[in-house]
Length: 344
Image (tube, rainbow, N blue to C red; front, side, top):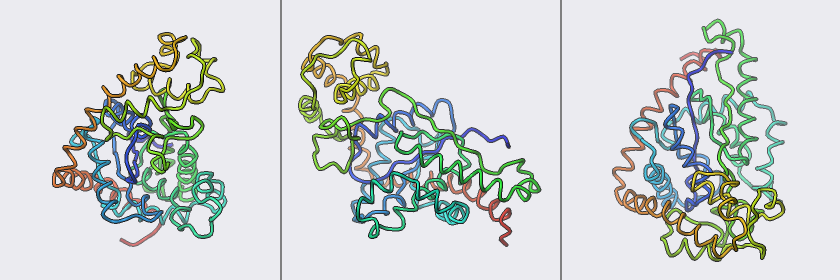
């Protein structure tokens, strides 16, 4: 297989309020990866329209996600931050990959079944097909690594399958044109940290979600200190004190979730948290968690509020990032068209 420049790509959907799960599961990883990789971070607005959106709210959400990236510490000068719809090559490559992927592969995607529910015949084709667009998002930059949550790992496997099939189907042309044994890399997942999957504060068996009707199920990045404290105090727990060993968290999803959140915010491990708080009751532990969460999140919330007031600045960041992303994406599409036999 050809040698590829190490490059990270990931995206966040601009739908609803960003919450603690987005921060711990994605944004903190994005910030850390800046130190070791060339990074491309995308606000995936094309993915957002797979379900109905109100245009004014979508535009505000695109800017909010961008503000969250910047407020959390992503350097938009050193790396690339942009919104997906400004780079047409995402959609262009998605069509090519639609013609490479197989129907059976998409039929195995479990997240579509969960999102579509029983009314599968009435959802948009985009909701069914969006894993192909996700593959195009990654492969149009020939990214080698993708920070993903567990729920997106299956989609990354699909991207790898599509890349591999493209490389095999067009292997002769790829080799003749000097791309070695493969044009597209097989992107690797980056799943790290003790709170990769942050669960609801009201139900430790369900993922923390923007779509949950209860605002008490999540901590929004825009929440103030008092709201954060109230939500953590009301978070569901069980009557037993915290265990001293990780094994003691088995079959205690709410306890495990709060311990995982604490560990991720503190950049420690669940085992270290339990060494410090094993045997204490939840009211004591929640007080410590409140202090930690407020200290970590409220500066980000304040910075986001200031940034979103300056729409021109946010739009300039997105425009500059899109221009830089477009250069990379166009290079990929020119090569793909040559490999396919298109005239350009």
